[in-house]
Amino acid sequence: MKGIVDRFDRRIDYLRISITDHCNLKCLYCTPFGGRDRLAHSEILSYEEIARLMLAAVQAGIRKVRVTGGEPLMRKGVVELCRMLSGIEGLESLTLTTNGVYLQELAPQLHDAGVQRVNVSLDTLRPERFKKITGHNLLSKVLSGIKRAEEVGLHPVKINTVVMRGINDDEIEDFARLSLKKPYQVRFIELMRTNGCGLDDHESLFMPVEEIVKVVRRVGELSLGPAVDSPDPARLCSLPGGFGRVGFIAPLSWHFCGSCNRLRLTADGKLRTCLFSEKEIDIKGPLRAGDSIAELADIFRLAAAQKPHGHSLDRTDIEKHFGRDMQAIGG
Image 1: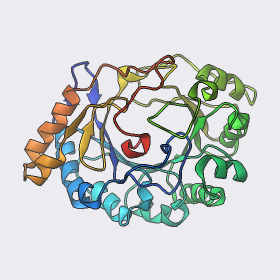
Image 2 (image 1 turned 90 degrees about the horizontal axis):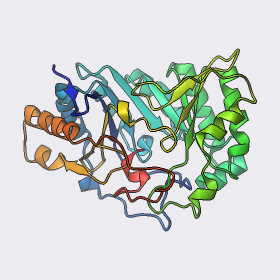
Image 3 (image 1 turned 90 degrees about the vertical axis):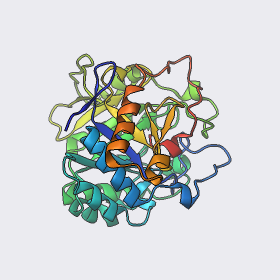
Image 4 (image 1 turned 120 degrees about the vertical axis):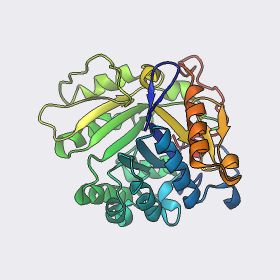
């Protein structure tokens, strides 16, 4: 099976699949002011349709898949979808991103269904602050879910923490210390301005990665080398004596577009060539019109051919419109 190489000589082998735009949390930086109109059930791809598209994606050259949302564990039958995807010949990696609320219950089933790793979004370790950021008092459930994921072998558990100055930046050291005790990857993420999110002033909340790194170094020495051409956006390093790792994802300070290897499939069947782009290619229409696997594979190749060289975000352009809010794209 021939892989996909785009016009900038990047090998495109990773697909993020959003299976729902619903979420049970209302995180400040993700949920728009006043809520949003959710997709109708008829607009969302069925599991059978997703599996058929994955057959085409693998034929085109996709080797890694991440299931996302919204919150993917809210969608009924998600374990069976994962089982369907993990059974596709040629797919090498199946992972999932979640807010962790339902992870304690579903972690064993997800592991049995072929999910190899999970990313858990977690921005605070303090119950009251968790309620302030997410709108719900569910921190204990998330922490129990992370523990259960570790126990059943979803390794490594990756914890994604969006740093916001004046909101949770005083917990950077606490999060970094998790990697001393547990084999987790704790990844600090620069705050991005997304469409109509519940944040009034991104500029005052934004904390550049250089400052985050300095705070982590209070916990222990880091050996953070220069960025390398890696498809993983996180630059990882270890604290002395740690069982896990810490990482930094900085879409504004450290552009990682030169090695980007991914496409995104939205819950309503559109292929996005870049997270920070309004450009979408409809694949649901051809799918429902009866296109063959080979014809659908060509649409994945077309999407890869149209990937931009990089996003246009920088620190002076943080209110750019991306066509959808983050909750509807899948991050």
